[in-house]
Image (cartoon, rainbow, N blue to C red; front, side, top):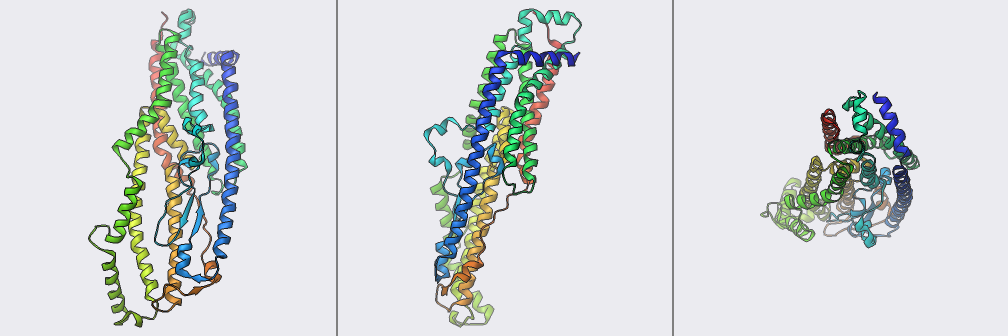
Amino acid sequence: MIAAIARKEFLDAWRDGRFRIAAVVVLALLGVALLMAWQQVERTRSERAAAAVMERENWLNQGVKNSHSAGHFGVYVFKPLAPLAVFDRGIEPFVGTTVFLEAHRQNQAAFLPAQDATAMRRFGELTAAAGLQLLAPLVILLLTFGALAGERERGTLRQVLSLGVRPRDLVLGKALGLGAALATLLLPVALLGAAALATLPDAEGGGSWVRFAWMGGAYVLYLAAILAVCLAVSAMASTARAALAVLLVSWAANAVLAPRLAADLVQHILPTPKLVEFEAAMNQAVQEGLDGHNPRNQRLQTFAQETLKKHGKTRIEELPFNFNGLVMLESERMAGEVFDHHYGKLWDRLEAQDLTVTWAGLVAPLLGLRSASMALAGTDFTHHRHFSVAAEEHRRDFVRVLNEDMMNNTSGGHHGGVADPSLWEKLPAFRYEPPPSAHALRAATPGLVVLLLWAVVAWIALLVVAPRLKPN
């Protein structure tokens, strides 16, 4: 009986002109979004790769200078774009793509793509993820708002139940039939996304396909929960018009209101410092220590005395190496502790904000889906933090090599002798290794849990409502 009802609902859905029109519109929008995103990802990846090659040439051809000057000459490193950004760009347009590495400073990523965008960006960006998050629920709403309430209005519900069809079988049959119609609509989108992903290089050696599979599961949970909620509302509503009104308000609350309210609320609960305040506090800590009572000059004087005692000398000039180079190494170490502390606190706060918004998805499932989708796509903040940490580790290695050259190959009292390209070649080019798919899955787990809870609770609610389905 359930299979027969499902087959009838599937055929009725495809015969419905509203559904065919909605299907064509949604498929066209998602197809265009995927094509545009694929072109943009390809162009961005090639541009950043070319920029990295050019920057490497600039570094190797900077000429003859002392190593200290080379530390201030610095290098630029570029953030590679994750393959699944073709599907969900996440926060990529709003975080920097390039980091300038130099001595004495840990710089934040700069050159945000959103800075070059037009004012139209405030209305959102057309991506496949946004289409599935916002448009697919609207298609489900059109399919389901009259599925049960309309039958009650037309009087056909009484006839169906009088034939001995159990209410639960009727509801489950409609759910399976409508779900199959939706799956048939979205299958071409999944195949197109897989084709686009197959053309992009996978730095994880297949990890992108694992992420893609988990992302598909997240969207299945989301749409399954939406389908169950819509059918439950249709079953309880007295008329199809009432069901439509309730579902439209719910869609607007989930898609428009909840993300904005959640962002404002989390900023109020877990505020982040302003950039000027953050940099001022960090610079003060560099000079006065993390506790504010350990000035940098005093620490370096103590370090000098300990170094002389260690080597059995009474004057810095008697040391068998350039003490200025050793001071530079120690200064970088002390500054690194400050950078780790302040950036660590800031990044922890931002991740706490993201986690709070994700758990707010218990009220609005879109919040949980966005979190899981961005994490699996590699375009969330945890992945940006991973890149920033890798860039800073490269900066410290690069500065350490220069300072060690100053310490071992120059005379005392100088900030670096003349160095040639042989020293520049000792510093390898930046090679970023993205985190494995397990890292993405851990980051996506809270969002996946939220979606699973929504799907389970929504279907339980539908099964509870189903036996109470009665004609007017």
